Image 1 (cartoon, rainbow, N blue to C red):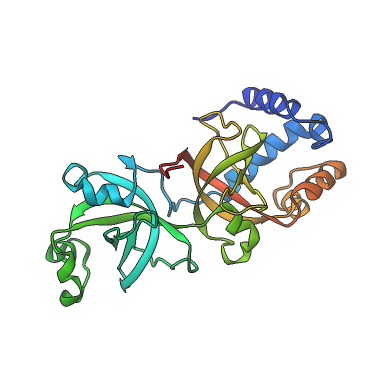
Image 2 (cartoon, rainbow, N blue to C red; image 1 turned 120 degrees about the horizontal axis):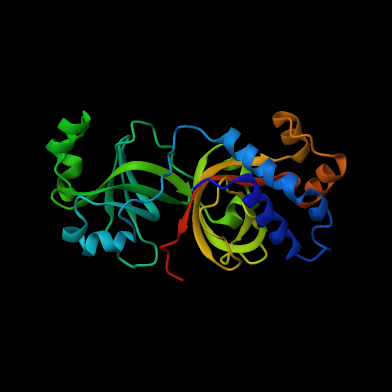
Length: 283
């Protein structure tokens, strides 16, 4: 849902006024300018390709797919899980970390693009159709040439025919070592720690004590983001450098605004979000 400029600016000013003046001394002067910057920045950074799409029929656990296959066959679901084994350039398995002995699910990459596996210990988010795995049907439908003997154990078991995929690191993992994720589309789940503006907030990582929060810019908010809410966010990661962004997009920021932004977010990673939705990860 698009937000008209007057509505967006009013929300930004109100949200900025809710913060203590010691944290953002520049906000009264630059709140409207920051809102316009965020909208322009995300619009310029968006690309037609969306490797990490918003979920379709449901945002679920892989365990749900295993236990409720009959109800989910033919539906599009989104899961966030640990990659277990790469079988071929087109296929790999995933399983839930929190369920001991969880049965792995076969993922078939039908995106038409090569999926680069994330660093060890990083989950992946997969959105795709739940189907019973029938090798000959998939080979015929997608033009794959799969080695038959590698898939005997997966025959007639549930599989995800992936329409989109993305690495799904924790917010603290990203801020701790962002270079391994720069310029990649990511799927990140975390708790909102601070609302900076109507389309800017930070996510924290409860699993990494003392970890730095991740800045998220969201172009046209279609829901009110509040502190302590838990969201799944997809988008592209880049480095936040206020002066470079001001010059690149000709935003006309005054020197004082640039200085304050650099103090707060200098050289930190920022996730340019294209989707935002409630998380299915259990607390």
